[in-house]
Amino acid sequence: METSQTEICSLILDKLDDLKAQEPCKIDVRAKSTITDTMIIVTATSDRHCGALARHLIDEMKKQGIESYGSEGTNTAEWIVVDFGSIMVHIMQDQARKEYDLEKLWS
Image (cartoon, rainbow, N blue to C red; front, side, top):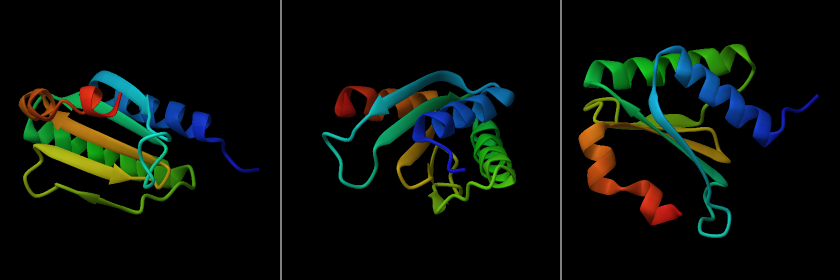
């Protein structure tokens, strides 16, 4: 049985909550993007927290049979993007989240 996008989003948010990701935000970008349908944005408290969230998310989703297509930003860990195809997860430190203001850009 295939998992719906809504179920995958909920699972992603649960896995991010496991490690105390802050200020979760889910944005439907289907009308504005051809590369993804949904963006999930969360705040990490430090570079270590950012990296830990990304690793945990990738590992836990894989256990559920949902593979990521890859991730970017793991070297600096200020802003990491994990690509699940129709869902892009942005894990950002507070300063980067304020600076780039993705919620305003994509809402």
